[in-house]
Structure formats: structure tokens, C-alpha cells
Length: 148
Image (cartoon, rainbow, N blue to C red; front, side, top):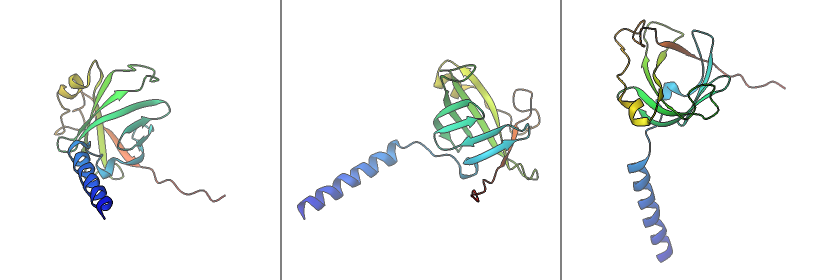
């Protein structure tokens, strides 16, 4: 019984510590496989944003309240490896099948703090609010199970 009580106490402390230091997770709508209105495909989870075929961003922070994330660019990226990126995003209405969009607000910052402090995209003007360009609109790709 004493071992069980100790185990419960340790698990409680581990849960509390994780809750206090855990990173915010991606918003549900941003998880999965997508294609943008330029025909580029993406796979996104809580810790990795992949722009196919070979561009990867290792997500270090999601800020769902302010609708952005900060990521470290993968060393294997063709350009700006080891630098930092801020991606602002927003939900769309009346643009189905495109339900949300994103903007690479910063993509070559020297530190994560610099990327995060970059001025946010203009969500009031999604057609020009991404450094003079439109937000890239994203639609979900439904992956069908193999019939083999």
C-alpha cells in the first residue's frame, strides 16, 4: 500500500509538472494533411510542419490565442536552414473548401525570439496582409485507406 501511495504521489507531481511546462498544442483544424491554393501539399502535427517535398519546420511554440507558431527551420531545408520562422494563421469563412490560411511572417530570423517578435500578418486583409501577398489558403486532404 505504501508503494502505491508513493506511485500516486509521483504520478501527480509528474502530471502537474507536465501541465505547467507542456507546450500548447496545435489547433485541431491545423492537424493533418493539406494542400494550398498553389497546389503545394503539407503535413502538420504538434511538433512538425512539412511543406512537401522537403521543407521542414520544427515547431517550438504554438500561440493559439494570437494565432501563430514559431519553428526552427530544418538543417536540410534548401534555404535558411537552422534559422527561425514565424507562421501566422487564420480561419476563413465563406471560402470553402479552404477553411484556414497561413503566412510566413518571418522565415529567416536568427533566433526564435526575433521570429516571434516580428510584426504579425494583417488578418483584416487576407488578400494582401501577408507582406503584400495573400495568405496561402489551406484545404484538408482526406487520405483514403488502401484497398490492397
